[in-house]
Length: 244
Ligand SMILES: Nc1ncnc2c1ncn2[C@@H]1O[C@H](COP(=O)(O)OP(=O)(O)OP(=O)(O)O)[C@@H](O)[C@H]1O
Image 1 (spheres, rainbow, N blue to C red):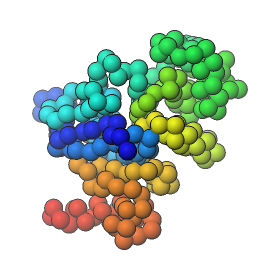
Image 2: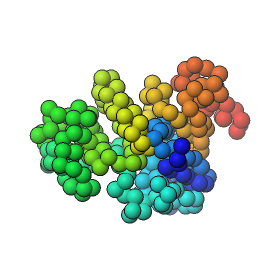
Image 3: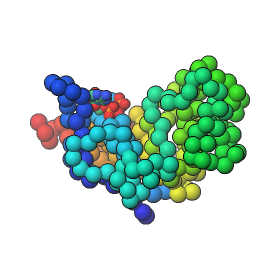
């Protein structure tokens, strides 16, 4: 399997002055092409920061991040990568369709692409609604549609299913699975363990380092349990005991 993303010895500091803090410490990992990799970990662990480094919008202190063979953030890979931020990043004064068409024109993507990604995220009925009038969950899906519009080879999604009901979550995961099967590299952050079970590979981040980096089954075996929630708690406690 080809490696789509390679992170080597990455250290990131965030904040300014006395508030400056070490967020990622000498972190190394790889994400395989055609796989769904889940980034998990407690709030504030550094998941979004790692994602920002992969997308190329995070200043790094040391280390390297390579995406599709190029340094993260290179102009040549920008159109090959789709990024969904936690806060929807689309135009509130445009409709869903106008937003999707705008991003499609930037790629540029084919004429039917905007409508097909709107259907893919389940917003067909709201396509002509202004984004400012959408619910939070709908807005997040509209933002996801814009991230999908260029059929990106690397899809980086920061909590894509927050605020979605179980049916929509199921549909969104099915759509990510279809994209991965077609060769896309999908990187997803989540706090939801039943979603972690759907990933091919999991990375558990804690205190800026990797606590686990394996398949869901291997992570469960490592912790001696069938339950991923319990597995993560066990691994976190083991680490705390080891460093006490
Ligand atoms: N703009 C910022 N300036 C300074 N520090 C920041 C900034 N954004 C995040 N941090 C800090 O970096 C650390 C990691 O944050 P990050 O957003 O990467 O965590 P996360 O694992 O994605 O958390 P969550 O699951 O809550 O989204 C936290 O301690 C946070 O306070």
